[in-house]
Length: 532
Image 1 (tube, one colour):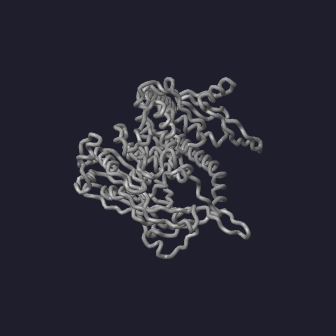
Image 2 (cartoon, rainbow, N blue to C red):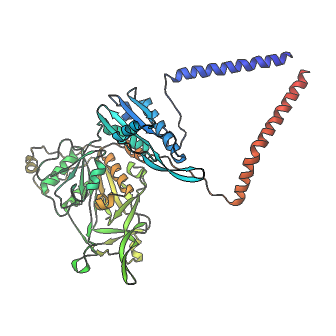
Image 3 (cartoon, rainbow, N blue to C red):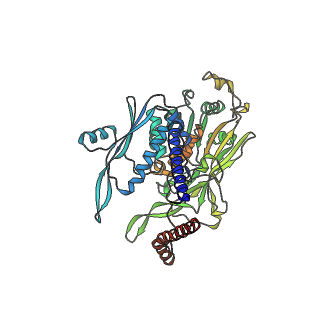
């Protein structure tokens, strides 16, 4: 054997041994130091900062028990892998306090155990032998923390999965985000009537209760107040309590109407007409920086409503366009509430006057489209509406405004009343200005969170929860709630392009192998010629 070949052989062995040694060292290092690289667009395969914080803050062991059928249909393979990847990430950041285990239910005892924890089987389509069959599937999990459990009954999609897992972990470990108080006795809806969907939605993340400020001060553990659709003037005592809550650094979400519409009654009873409404809460909000005007927004970007129409001898409900049912758009800023917003559906929304005081920043987080305008109240609202060109001459109306900064007390002006007497009613000292990082949110539509608008509207649900997160200074959760695995479908191709790609796929690999073979053959021939 020529000497050059021996040298080449020894070099190849040396390189192989060196590579093996490097791999062994890297494996040993990786057991002590954790790290990974996520090259996806939104880092969806890496835990967000909020999730890492929940995992690292665990004080006691938390176990996730995954009930997983062994033979999943193809459409659920990605969901299974994404779920297990996320659980591996939680375990990496859990500092030994988070573990997960996988159970493949194959016996009646294991199925009873899963269902006892709240993990339920579901039916999925399975394609086998050119047939579609329904198969009973388990793909869910339960978090076990001491004697507490929190289950995700069925995981069928990757959308919002990390948020669901982190929220369940926080609930089972009692990591509450804060306490929300809904102001009662305002003439508007309440948690027991009109806001039951809000209670159900919010109570999964926050502790929520009604507070009657005419009878007692704001409880000390309340972090956010919701004021929903007040009617008429509230007492000075109530306004003073809200104002001083803001001055102490509390956050308030004002959901106010500029008018009231009645679509149920007939024309003789005033039905089909919207009238302006005023309340002293508007004055309070305008003092802080924003308040609704007695107008309604008309928008060419809108939803449909059901209206009775005559079809021959019958009167049937028909879906018709309704420009007063606005699809609110993101405000176009980098604000946390706009950045992750898709849209907000607002029925009878009023535009906001925005006049922030010195030291206060006002950011429009929801607005109407570029093809919108306003109608002054009173106005006819019975569908179908008669539209005119002047209805769409005032674009980009502010519908929700975030206010941030140091607010001056509404009661600094002594002409509004005696702060001494109001404060003495609850033995509280008067505060003239709020902290510099105070937050308020003013929305020109109270119907946004009522049962009719919130129960089945995912857009409004996300906006409400994001608003509460922002007001509670849990900004990281806003981004987490919106994270999801997005489909990236290929663009449709014309027949010619499809044919070219088809032949390239068929012939390309073979031609590449032939080209590499010819290259290696010529290279060996030259090396052999030189050695001789």
